[in-house]
Length: 160
Image (tube, rainbow, N blue to C red; front, side, top):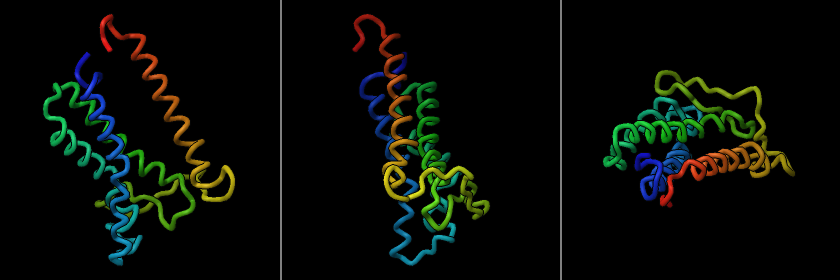
């Protein structure tokens, strides 16, 4: 297995993926600057788009993962792009914000919200945290658990 699946490089990719997943909300700086949520530069605009995710994933891979082999760099870029796109997809599942994400900005500022919006912002398990726990965190932990279990099963003798 390549470096992407082991040790320090694996941790670096996971850390960068977490940063990429949160990066779209950097557009919140527009609120104190008076940028409207309906603007392409407003919240859930350009930084929540698929083109932004592609560029960010590619840039972060080139800038922060230059030592990975070509195959691992491609896998890391895909992981970073998907982490970034996931932010917008989850925002499209909310009903508590004035707009959905502009998935195709800068080409169009059309905003999208999915029909299924489990992240509603209502009380109990229906709070932002309760719903995100059920819809986002638990499935993510299950996927991580399966990946880690599979990785441990296929580990060669002497690997950590």
